[in-house]
Length: 381
Ligand SMILES: NC(=O)C1=CN([C@@H]2O[C@H](COP(=O)(O)OP(=O)(O)OC[C@H]3O[C@@H](n4cnc5c(N)ncnc54)[C@H](OP(=O)(O)O)[C@@H]3O)[C@@H](O)[C@H]2O)C=CC1
Ligand SMILES: CC(=O)[C@@H](O)[C@H](O)COP(=O)(O)O
Ligand SMILES: [Mn+2]
Image (tube, rainbow, N blue to C red; front, top):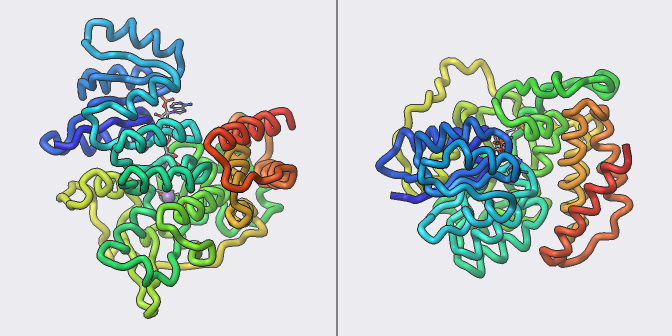
């Protein structure tokens, strides 16, 4: 029985994680869950999964939930302290990091120090502080199992293979809802248009990132740290069907790929059951239903965010922190209709240009750069 703590149980990844727990009550026990605004869903999750602890980031919502569930024998925690607490509970084996954004950094760092296995969906943490996180994981003998579908695909293809025999990895990207369009077609698109992802049903922030191709840029940086690769070993190809979830090319020219229907429950389940595999009731890929699998080069003129991510990774140090923090703030401004689609890459580029990168930043440096970047972005409009 694996005892799990879910950071962000009310979101897309978090609820799908609970679906897997529900289907496998003999394999998993939920010790802690967390949310931020959706206290009604948290109340339902408490009723069904009977966690011992619940962290609610928003302190007012924590108080509200405390009132609602006061007789249910569950401890309600609040704020970042609450997230850190449920990331480090003694009896917990696996921490599923499914919060969105860099808020996941400190709880993940603390979970690693507490020697928890990390099932990592929260890619912003690795983008912001990948070197620190991976060094801490290695120091503590902690496994970080990828949940992100492309990184789960790479992880599965690497199973039983020596990383030294890897020539490169190829991350696939759907191309998002605006694939094939040009800058002039996109000047006045709204977040409503950008939220229509062609293949995946995800949370809002990642869906906007998929539309700008920043999601793939974040995934390039995530892959660098997860698999300890050089930047020129990480390729991106547009694959509109999202059936091939990514590929590994080995030094002998052989390529391994992991395929499946676009359903996040598969990588989530694999991260939870690893190193075992268990049966699932998910629908399977039917090759008779596939007309074709197609591939295209990414169009980084129309979608500059992917190029900006490669540049940030190449510069290194605290620059990926600036990329991520500015992107997070700009995505929320775009979602709230405050800025246009191209303000996102334009402002990220400006935030990167004004930043003097810190080599080998400490986690304190990173938190300061993150904060200052967010202030810069929010004072720019
Ligand atoms: N969705 C997907 O299919 C995929 C997601 N990922 C990654 O997984 C992570 C989660 O994504 P997704 O599930 O889509 O996100 P959602 O927006 O659906 O859910 C985010 C979760 O984080 C909580 N949350 C939001 N802000 C805060 C905060 N400031 N403090 C604490 N908790 C907070 C939300 O709480 P509440 O809802 O109560 O406000 C919710 O539980 C992201 O890093 C994403 O990039 C990776 C691959 C695929
Ligand atoms: C499901 C998942 O892993 C997402 O990261 C997805 O890959 C986003 O789609 P894009 O390929 O359009 O970025
Ligand atoms: Mn992904």
